[in-house]
Image 1 (cartoon, rainbow, N blue to C red):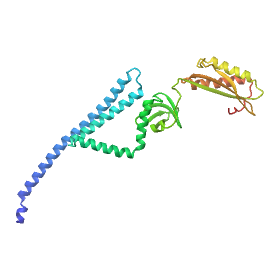
Image 2: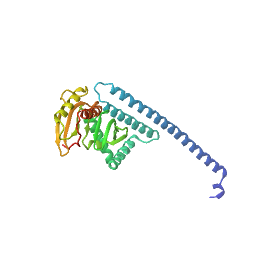
Image 3: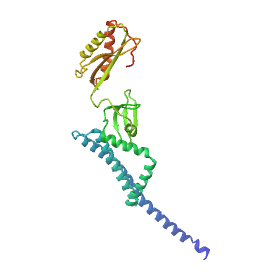
Image 4: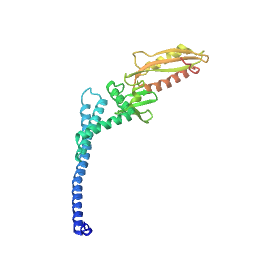
Length: 278
């Protein structure tokens, strides 16, 4: 073939024009797809948030419906909407739905094998929501974790410590260890321990303690407060005041009664000694 015919400027220009036209068509086509995908993502994000808030508000208004479960279900609904939006966005680029589902299944299997600890947190979160050993607003202690529950999530639980520290505890940690819920029963027992010398009047010490407890309106009458000798030691006698109060008044009552016991014992001229272990 003649080399000049291959390098014909007119033929080359026609080929370039055809390529440009084809590229322009692809750019225009995919521009609409990208624009549609962006619109779907923005709209889906807003709709997912609206669904979450609406569902949570509706479930919270149902009498007797636990707020923890309501928050969890609303979060699941939000993620479900987002997953549907992602599938729709992929469909904008011609990806078949069956292929998407298969890919999600394969990815889920791979992720599940790689993130077994995360799946344990999810399973533990579901069990915590089902059995409800604690609810939002309650105070719990699990191992070294101690604070007020603020949110129970799918993977972790958010708490606030007594000193205001932010705590994010994995659900598996809270599920695999004993949970001490200090507010569930609405009543707590407390012991105020005082050590006095052997030559002190133990009967008077017990009497003063009981009088102080009965005079405090926060101390419950049933069961009644009691004072007793808890232990004997070389240095002295350990006297204990035991009483019950509501969980809300627990700390403040303990502080006040401890101070009052100290003052009354000083007035009675008791000599203090180191308390002995019971």
